[in-house]
Amino acid sequence: MAFTAQDVKKLREMTNVGMMDCKKALQATDGDMDKAVDWLREKGLAKAAKKADRIAAEGVAYAAVINGVGVVIEVNSATDFAAKTDAFLDLVKKLAEAVATQNPADVDALKACAYPGSSLTVTEIMQEKVMSIGENIQIRRFARFAENTSVAYVHAGGTHGVLVNLAVEGGIDVTELGKNVAMQIAAMSPKYWDKSLVPQADVDHEMQVQVALMDNDPKMASKPAQVKEKIAAGKLNAFFKESCLLQQDFVRSDLFQGSVEGYIADAAKKRGGTVKFVDAIHYVKGEGIEKKVDDFAAEVAAQVANAGK
Image (tube, rainbow, N blue to C red; front, top):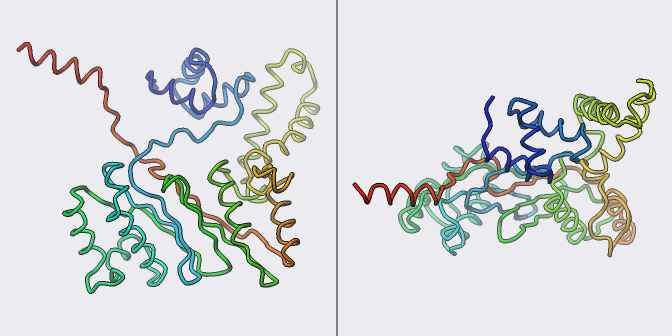
């Protein structure tokens, strides 16, 4: 599999490793990005990869709690300018309201819903919005929580939309607690919510990486395989602490020093109740959408060449 300079750049962004080492990793793994990350980790050059392969698209990731129902939705537009207009933001909020009140099964069902405050459908209103805003607008995805207590958080004007779902006892207000957990999710992008949810295949893969890392360490290479496996198993806690929300260090150390799980228990106790993290949804605007990247230098060169004809 061939790779490009853009692949090297992408791997560097994912791992914070130098360009030459990233190039070597891609050469050694025939351009396979995931294997290249493992190659760098096994050489002791990188930690677990960041989720930097998300190519941004424009639009908004939005979350809200409407009449007790939590909703998170992503709506995309062609430009950032359109996404910041009042007309676009009003559309997103009304779509969230439709999701909360009408419980559509999927995006197609949402398009067939009645648009809040109108006799028209969502599709009909969106057609009007496309004409007035002058850009293509697409509903990409949405989710909702109708049970338990939900807390919504929107980061940086819609780059992240986070919805946290909590089981609350004692009649306490968990708005601040839930927002702090949501902010943790937006900031740290945990791969799993809890270590109990990590698939065994991922645990086995992490063990293999840790053993390979010792195989490449002159001080550890001669150790018996059983010893290496025991050490690797001991390092799984560090993996869980990095990858799992509830095991991560709570970023608001001014409020609590310890894990997110510990913060939730402590904050609930101080409020006179109990809180259990149930689930969460984290939308990142444009996550996984391929966006055209214009090569300005090539574009100028082409224009110059054409001008000479």
